[in-house]
Amino acid sequence: MKIFTATAIGLVLGLPLAAQAATVEIRSAVSAVQLGDTFDVELVFDRDAGDAPLAEFGIDVDYDNSLFSFVGGSFSNSLGDIAGTNDIADQTGFLQLLVSSTTDESTLDTLQQSAFSFATLTFSADAVGTGSFDLDQSFAFFADANFAGIPVTYGQTSTDVTVLAPIPLPASALLLLAGLGGLAAIRRRA
Image (cartoon, rainbow, N blue to C red; front, side, top):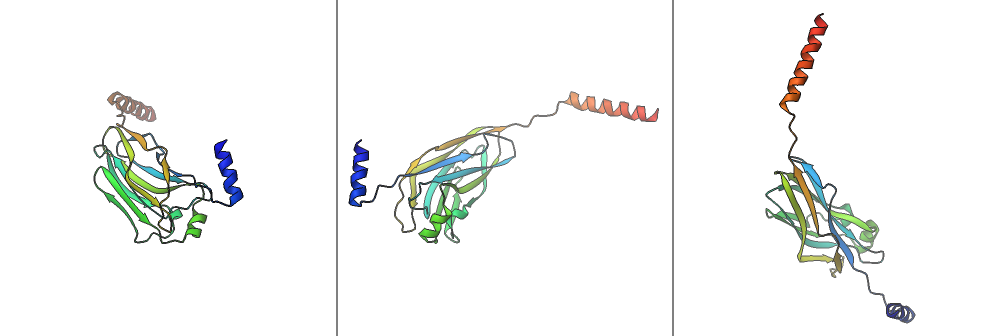
């Protein structure tokens, strides 16, 4: 009731309402991959209509470098023009992502409808096991086109991926196939 009353008084007096915090998450579309496969991990920014769009950010992503290797990454078109103002530094076990858009706020507002993936990171599976990808919030920052901080909350801050060993074809199956092939060859002659 207190929140409703404060909101009503603010609307009557013409005071701006406090913006809700945007949500930042890390997601993987896969939970298991085969040894040697590549897969993507995405960073997602979800904001409410009326909240300032994302123009710049810095965040670290920790990963298990005994299981995974960083292959490459890309940033979303929803960030506008980031040419020359983006970087992904692989520090072997964690990535440092830094981006600053030179696109104006109204264009960013149009580009960023609701939730969007602001970074896609590609990894290769190098060893068997389960490892995690974690958002490191220690030095994270998110800002709008006017360099004002955007308040964020963190949703899913970790995602696990299991690397599976390839399943070898048993030698007995190869012998069975060879035997069937031999029978087929004998039958053709007859």
